[in-house]
Length: 279
Image (cartoon, rainbow, N blue to C red; front, top):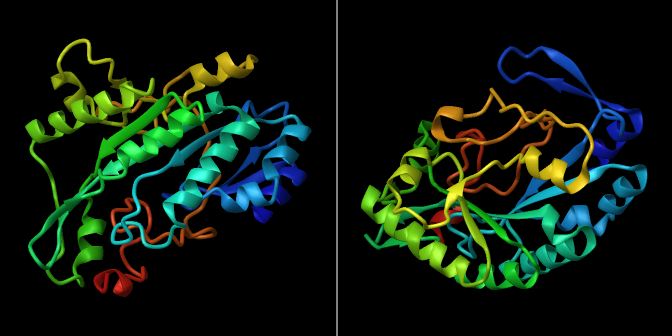
């Protein structure tokens, strides 16, 4: 956040294209930025530093994607306890409005341990939905884990551990169960890049595709001018509904320390996985 706020003060961000390494400048003035979207699993640094209040005073609109999955330290080892993250969700909603906060339950994971037991991270969904509903959250975005090669490389040192991809029928059953649980609390379920599954669901479930960068929603919340074009850099063919935006983050400058086992973004090498095998 120190880096981010210094660039806000400067009025621009220098961003390195991860594919061709070219540097380009992104203007950051309030007259050129419609909304700042923050996406995290741990908003403690953001909240404790009162950065949101500072940004609001400067005239920025804010939107948040809060990923809350599980207490499972095998999958997500370096996060605060779920109870602390619940408090963060409640504070975010109270300070900035529940309509500006999306809850992500993402990704849904199944895995097998060295004992042969098959586990998943669905056990905390109901408890999280209770807290989300109590905080006024009305949107839950979910998807199933994508089995990228870097993830398989990451788990190679973990004897007996493997990720499992459920059958399509099982995935549909899970989504209907989650939708029932969420719907009882007035939370609508949205699918991220699950176009095929969405097409196979029974009619009238209320489950729809998602836009994690929802410019239509941002315009409805804050008015003003904002592009409603689809983000061509995302997986549109897979069902991504994200609208045009610019990512100013950098995995090299700001590596994530959460060390989530299923992470599609962090490199497979250099992550500490020894502690996972002992849990």
